[in-house]
Length: 157
Image (cartoon, rainbow, N blue to C red; front, side, top):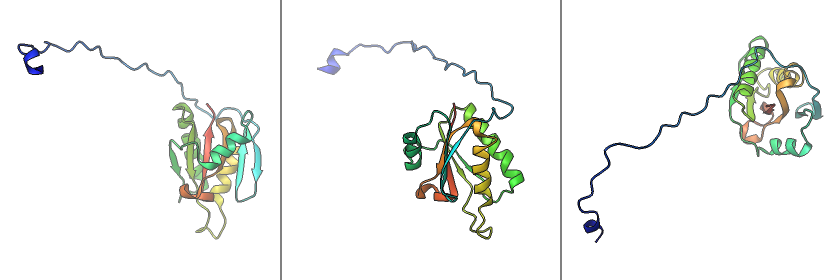
């Protein structure tokens, strides 16, 4: 019956769809880090967490649980402090420009550096200091994402 009903039908000559061009996002990347903001530090030396103004403990707990998915990852393994600092700055600036909500920074536990977690200390100090204008909160990652050898960072929009 269906074939009988469409007998003699002719396909349309062209497509009548209009191409939709996505709007361009006019976000100007900052050339330098924004001004510092106060970061409240919590936890132990090995498991330091920090939260900026306007971030509740509930939001920090969600970040710590891994409820907020990391949208990008930066691996600092094997870098010196001199090389890791500009890489961290560039990554955070790019993440803010792309409006990423959460990122993962892998810095290691310091197991191959004589038990001294130099990069972890650098990352925590940098997130709570010079880069604090880009940071809403940070905490150690879940064990599946690296544990104390990595940090979740909630990027300030």
